[in-house]
Picture 1 (cartoon, rainbow, N blue to C red):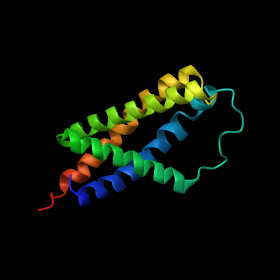
Picture 2: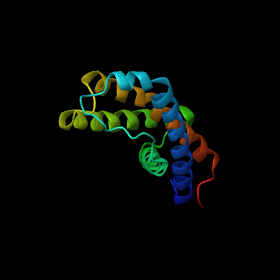
Picture 3: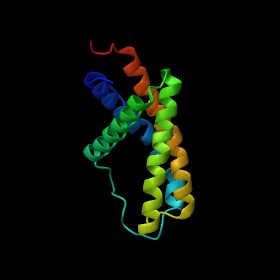
Picture 4: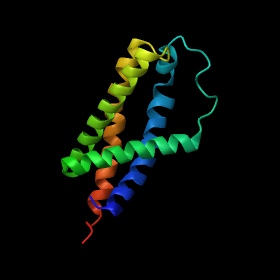
Length: 139
């Protein structure tokens, strides 16, 4: 994947991942996450730091783009598959390390979060594949 396509995929993917993440984690599953928090107190911010959330989602999208380049997925389905795998593995890793080190979540939340990331990352990966697939490769 050339630089132009990588950057376009990262930007579009970052925006899609942020929007879909908001819908999944802040709207649809907010009560689940609140009910399955660990014993740590005062760790959630009253409001998200938008710049930090956007940077994190750009990094997530760049990781999916990088994995796509290595796997050469075909179309939206291939992009969704790569995004779903990256999302699951990334958050499985992070959630279990945080579970082992902190009291931020209980085991139920630690198990469910990576499963929700299959949907989140899959949608992001499909969006990236769509944008990158519509662009002509650099000559």
